[in-house]
Amino acid sequence: MKIAFDCTSTQPTDKMKFNGGGEYTVKILYELLKHLNAKQDKVVLLTSQNKGVNEQIGSLVSENIQQFKYTDLSDLNDFLSTFKGDLIYFPICYPLYSKLKLPDGIRVIGGIHDMSSFFYARLGNQPGRYYKKDGFDILRRLKDSVLKSYNMKKSLLEHKMLFHLNNSTYMYTVSYYTKSVLQYYLNETVTNVFYSPLRSFVNINPRIEREFLKKCNIESKQFFLLSSISRWFKNNVRVILALDELFSSHLIEGNYKVVLLGSTKQHKNYFKKKIKNYDHFIVLDFISTEELEILYKNAYALIYPSLLEGFGYPPIEAMRHGTLSICSTSTSIPEICGEASIYFNPTDSDSIKAALLRAFDLEYYNSFKCKMAQHYDSLSKKQTYDLEYLIHYLLGV
Image 1 (cartoon, rainbow, N blue to C red):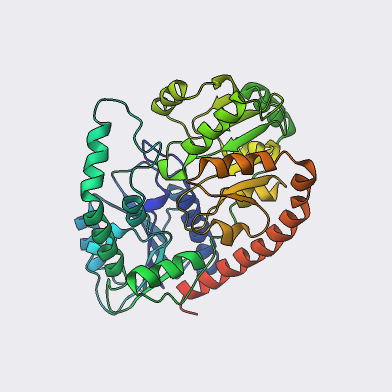
Image 2: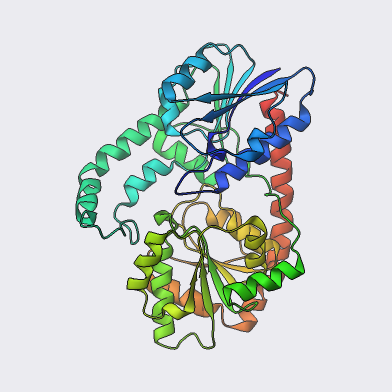
């Protein structure tokens, strides 16, 4: 068997070193390789020369695992149009791939996670989307408003074309939420839903745990955690401002902190101007996997206010450590988190504040411990099963 496997999503960029989509792709690749014959089957890893290098992918290159680095979409199309193999697989099938002209007779399988480009346009001017304050933010808002309808239609057309890259194209998705979205907006029926696989976890070194918490000037169970600060659709700005108001009104008692992850220099400057109680906030950029595990384990609660998720890893990762998540009701999040999280309306500041205050009711807070353990157990079993099912699907079994 010969497979062309797209690894573009695993590559880091200047704005984002790590992302859930990249880890998703790596996990599937590693699992697929376990099922292949190391001597007979061949895999070609597709990577972009315009993005950074993923060392995990590079380390796999061998006699039967090759790598093709493309310069642009045309270059990728030229390679795939002459690819003599059994399968072309896009773990994350970007709308840009709708321009590819793939040969008939070869199986093409792609995963559509969230139709992000469509919802980016639809969501419009959200808080935190424009933060540069360089004099052009107003023009950015105006441009997006004028082009909103055009961008939505363009994205829908691109997603529609993904289902017809050739005469043997099959698309799947990672949540029943996204399945319904594809059916509603595109009138395309997706047969298979494969939940995103369990992420790989690292064992926490107690010494490193103590040193990291001390370095960040935080104490266990005395801080809230927010991730992906630099991505506006994660909706963190609304929560940060809501927390700031709760600190100002003294409705949050004690020396609680808020740890913000994935912040750039521009975002730090933005928050310094916006936040009144800046001493309550710990602003970090990108951290290691072990450090992230430490924060999941020690947080009082993870706050997950995202406006758009195809699946949504962070609440599940926090749940694994018995850490409660306070989540948005948007998109796939209630489907994935079930009854094991506290929810709020992500566009309503009052709803956010009320949810945060509910987490300080210890009887209510502790009632989630059993729910989280049960839900994590059942969800992880489904993730494990779906990964195995997906691998067999890719192999044509």
